[in-house]
Length: 624
Image 1: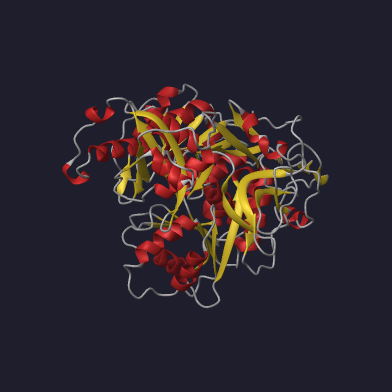
Image 2: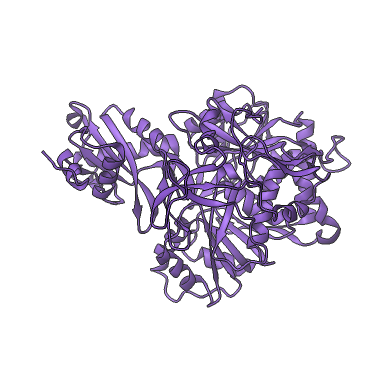
């Protein structure tokens, strides 16, 4: 079980903003709390004495009045579509609940969801929550080796996967990867497989088709109980992996009541009454909390899209918004930058009258991108929101730019120096929160959970975010990046140390350093600098005919692919520098900044040869 009693960790000293009381009243708790909040470690104790069931909040309580209302519009990458009403969603969730109970799954058991963005994913999330099981979403694109690493840490009882997953017009062999990865663990008793693409898969003992177990557990056919379990508010509903630091994998544990409070608060601030679409991967915590739990907990309609937004063509975003009458679009700035690049080839883009708000989250959004979004998607009154938050806080906790009737409670955001004192206008410091946030994590799991405690120990009485920012006129932050060796890429945290370790494990690499830079099209991207091992250049294979004439081109592709295979595509550096040496004249921050300034953004992966003297010059340090 997670570390939920960190008595050695200090807590926030200021009380939460009063608006949380109205949000908690809207959750639909089974038993009201004896106290909304009391001081304690980390962000204090929320919803003491309350009981709740996330499945009841999201489905059951809406059945008397909204049984026939659409809960989910879903669209697959090939163009297939499904719509689930609240009544239909309830029927599928209760059927899967019976099946899980029949498998022996109960309160506190672990279930892995190695699934793409499917209706079945939502059904599984809600069925787990209904019986108090704890689910973890495992990114569908993960290769077998990193998937095996994740499975070995989770102690799952049941794993959901699918035969294959559509992605960018091709099919990823999810079950085959899961079969290989499961060799790393012996805890999984059942594998439940969703038939999505119809591809052939190998079958082993313990494998079950989802459609078979649902058919066997319809009402009247299966004695197992599907009644929801009343759970303490801080009972874990899900774990989400955090970027590892120095080879220390940790997962954030989110409580049921806390997750609902954060999701309901954000949705009340963003919603306009119509369809709500979060365009992001299901493994992104924002998608889970604010793309599904938020709309359903508020009795709204969620739009889900399975694949990449350039299939079958670059108009897919406009088509989805128009088809379902989307009123609020929540996504990452990086998604909007990609769509902007496509749009340059699309003449006569139509505005979308239904769209009232576009909100970006996960990374800073530049003014140029905001201006393009308004021009490409909107009418004159289209609102643009900029959302900020963190996984440890339960997703989004602050939204600027919107005129909303239900603003999020004030989290007490401030910018402080190394001593915890507020910085003046124009000065740079670390972003902190002075007030508790209801959606904050209830625990942490992993080999070294103490790596999370720095949020509360660095400036006792405050929550230190690890984000660096300059105080702009009016007190607002201008975000500059991270203060640690973790960077947000397309809204997900990537450990620079982990990427460095993968690169240095390559036999041709002697030493490596990884930093990030800004790309006008992609946002933040990673840049790697390496020195080669002795004799490596003589051993590098000849480049392929289309990859250039420099043998280092082949090495660059190999290094980039090794990172992608080990850590996923977001961790893959977009540019490579080959240095003659690393000197000791510069500190880490200085040479990282210089390397970023020297890097090219050649999408073909061609490396750039750079001398250490050039790095010194770029850093403003005397060379020689």
